[in-house]
Structure formats: C-alpha cells, structure tokens
Image 1 (cartoon, rainbow, N blue to C red):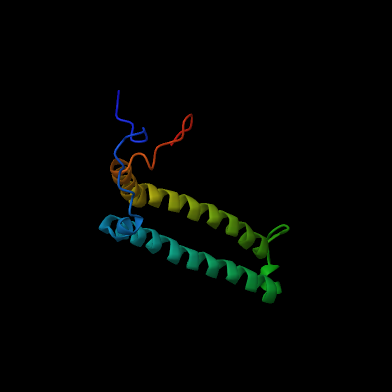
Image 2: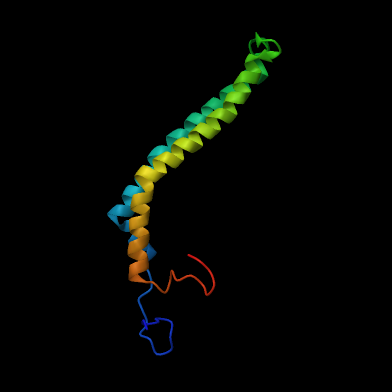
Length: 127
C-alpha cells in the first residue's frame, strides 16, 4: 500500500507557493505566449465589430447595396461576424494546443508532483 499524506500522523507537506510559481520562467513564457495571441486578436476583432456597427449606423446606402437577390452587403458582413468568431476560436484552440498546453501541462505536473495532496481529486471524483 502507498503512503497516504492525508492519513493521521503523516508528515505535513509544504503548501504550494503560487507566487513563486508565477515567477518561474516557464510561467512567464506561458503568460507571454497567451497575451501575445489574445490581446492583438481581441483588438482586431473589436475593431472589425465596431467597423460593422458604424457602417450599419452611418452607411445605410452602402450596407443596403444588393449583392444577390435580397442579400445585401450588410447581411454578408453580419454573417462574416459569426464566421470570424468561429475562425478565431478554431485558430486559438490550434495555437493553445501547440504553444500553450505543453508548457501548462509541464507546470501542472511539477505542481502535482510537489504537493499531490493539494491536487488530489475528492473521493469518487475525477481530476
């Protein structure tokens, strides 16, 4: 049988110092990579969204220009809002899988190895 750190009489383990974890180069790199994707993408999407809103409010004739039958430029740009949202989401998932998740998994494994009782799943639960 293995050693149960939560058993009575077990030696207390050191708590995880999350402030120290934030200072690690791995964590700093993870945060840098995350921010380098999220902030520019959020800014670009907000600009694209506000452009659509401003065009809808101030360029009625342009937005109502027919493209095909009852489909006009305004409708196409509105649908492109949804398409771009899904596209950005898929791009982020791909980026996170390649550039963020390996570092995050390594950090998580280090923390779980250092203090397994802190990250232990409750009885009957899963991690």
